[in-house]
Length: 244
Image (cartoon, rainbow, N blue to C red; front, side, top):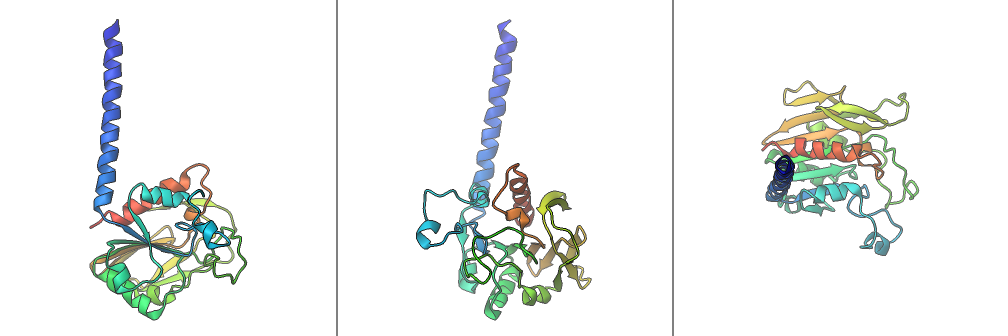
């Protein structure tokens, strides 16, 4: 009578060992991919706070997206895009960034064409509330202002102001992505780009590199009660940065 129980225990232990080994392998593989650059106006790496001490408080709860990324990769924030600041990275996350200076557009384009992989969230109307008033430099960018670099890649970001607000999950490359008042990309019909879900997302091969762009940033909102945002972000990170 004891043998079936022993066998069951051994099977469970073997499965647990396999899971741990798989997790360790995946974690080590992600570490080998090198650091992930982060360029954003959203409070992902630094918390939204009134002063620097509160922003840097080590006892504060970090954004869930930062925890998710740092479980997989070393995450390094970037303040300005230059050839020097982009050089350490093969992968870059741009999440509702501020408007880029002309030199930053050139640096980003050169970096992607040289083999960089970009995951871009460009929201034409950010829906998450901020504690800072419009015009405050600490407030996340409400409207993505990336027309120059998008146009250079043959893309245009549009917004339908007649749509109704409210969160809805949309299918992007088989990934259920939470969205709210999302935009849409248009292409010029170039063969190197593919649109997804009526233009909510676009993937483009650019030189030796690749860009995955989402016309919404609701997936990065601070509240994630059911884990849907975490699941979507993990899948988008894998999709954007898996191809070498």
